[in-house]
Amino acid sequence: MKVGVLGTGKIVKAVTPTMEYLEGVECYAIASRTLERAKQAAEEYGFEKAYGSYEELVSDPEVELVYIGTPHSRHYEDMKLCIAHKKPVLCEKAFTLNSRQAREIKELAAKAGVFVAEAIWPRYMPSRQIIRQILDSGMIGTVSTLTANLSYDIDHIDRITNPELAGGALLDVGVYGLNFAIMHFGKEIERIESSVQFTDTGVDRMETITIFYKDGRMAVLTHGITARSDRKGIFYGDKGYIVVENINNPQSVSVFDTEDRLIEHIDVPKQFSGYEYQFQECIERIEHKELESCSMPLDDSIFVMEVADALRKQWRLVYPQEK
Image (cartoon, rainbow, N blue to C red; front, side, top):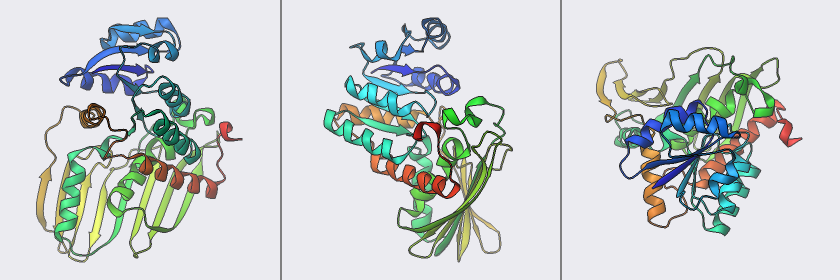
C-alpha cells in the first residue's frame, strides 16, 4: 500500500522507519508547505515523491493511504482535504480541536465512504488486551480506582505552548491519560472534576482530572508539560493492584497482592516501535472495505474530544480558532 504523509515534523521522523519496516507498505510521497522542505524530507526519510502542497499529494492517484502528521490544530482541515479526494486517513492525535470538528469528520467520511482513524498507538497495542485479561481474571478482585500520569519536559517547544497551534498538556499528552481511562473503565461517566495551571501564553501547563463513573469507580489522571513523570498507570482492587509501565507505550504489566508481593509480571511482545500495530490494522480494514478502525472507532475519538471540551469549559480555555 502506497502511503502519503502530510507534514515533516518530529512524529513523521519517528513513524517513517516503521513504515519502511512493514511488509506491503511503501513510503511513497511526502508533502510540506514548501517544496524545498518536502524534497529534504523525502531524501532524508526515503520517500519516492515530494510535494510542495498537501493538495498535490492528495491529488496523486497512486496514494492509497494518507498519514497526517501535522500539528493537531491542522487535523480537521487536513482530514477534510483527504476525504474530499477519497483518500483513506490515519490521523495523529489529538484527532481534532473539539468534538464538533470530530463529529463533522465522521459525517463527511461516512458520506464519502472513506476510511478514517485516529493514530493513538496504545489503542492498537497488544498491551491493551493483556491489561484487559488481567482485569477480567479477578486477580486483583473488585477494581475501584485507576490512576495514570503522563508528563514530559516539553514546554520549550513552540507548538506545545502556542494557543494558535492548540498547545497545552491536554491535547498533547492528556489524550493518552483520557484514552487509558476510557479504554479500561468505559464511557459511563457521572461527572468530571479538575484543577489546572496555565502557561504565560494561556494554555494548560499542568492538570489533574478526576473522573467519577456511574458504578462508583474513579479514574485520577495527571498531565503536564514541564517535568518528566514516571508515566505509570495503576489499577487498585480489593485483592491487589496492577502497575502498567508507561501508559504512552506500555512496556510491562505487573500484578501485586495486598502485601505488595509480585504475583505476575508480563513483558509486552517484542515490537519494532509500537507504531506498526496502527498501520497494520488500518491497512487490513481498508483492504476489507471497512470505514473505521475496530481499536479506535470514530465514536471513541469523538467521546475523547467531548471529555476534553468539558474540561476546557471548566478551565475557560478557548483556542483562537474557536472564537
